Structures are given as C-alpha cells and as structure tokens.
Image (cartoon, rainbow, N blue to C red; front, side):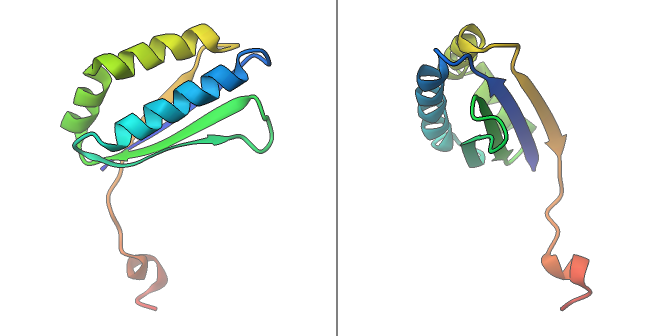
Length: 105
C-alpha cells in the first residue's frame, strides 16, 4: 500500500476556490482504480491549510493517478492558488492486523 500526505496553504482570498478545487479532485480521485482512500481536511491549527491523506493499492496506481490530465490540472491550479509551494510525501506501508500490535487482544 502507498500512503500519500500533502499540504497546501491558501491565501485568504484564494481559500474558498482552493477548497472547492480540492474537493472536486478528491471526489474524482476516489473513482480511480487503485484508490482505497482519498480525503482533504482543513488543518485545525491553521484554517488556511488544507491537508490531504490518501491510500493507494500500489505504485502503478499512484503513477497512473499523477499522470492523469485532471490530476495534473488540479496540481497546477493548486500551485497558482497557494501562498507557498504545496508539499507532498509518499510512503510505502504494510497492512498489520490490530492483533499484531495488541498481542492478540
């Protein structure tokens, strides 16, 4: 599984437009093959920051997502509306049953 986190800081005058574009991107991405979870949240400590959390089946799904014309257009729009360059991080993760952490309880 691939986990992606991202953060975009909006300018006060661009927040509403960036939020709506982000929600459209999330809704569209959820329908892509290999997308297990895709969400955007407003940062509780900075109401101008949008935080993304995504999980994808594998690298191939992520590469296809980032090659998608709509995803690329969202990235360009997000950069234009942001107060500073957006950040993104990708992680490889393994599914662990809760019992592995709790000793079977």
